[in-house]
Length: 81
Image (cartoon, rainbow, N blue to C red; front, side, top):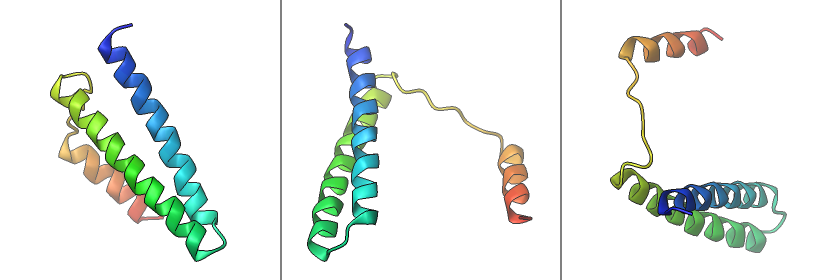
């Protein structure tokens, strides 16, 4: 398996972990549990950011530039609701 494939899998896994910790933070019933989940979420977000930056640096995570007109159209669509 190539490095790119491994990094993609790691990124997907850490995104899933972040989702679980986010829901744990939202649903926690005590301040202590809330803080524990929140700390774990923040650490996971840091890891996710490092993986993303490494992939982007290597050209493995391509982003697409969107025309300003398309952005404005979407903003108007949701502003009217």
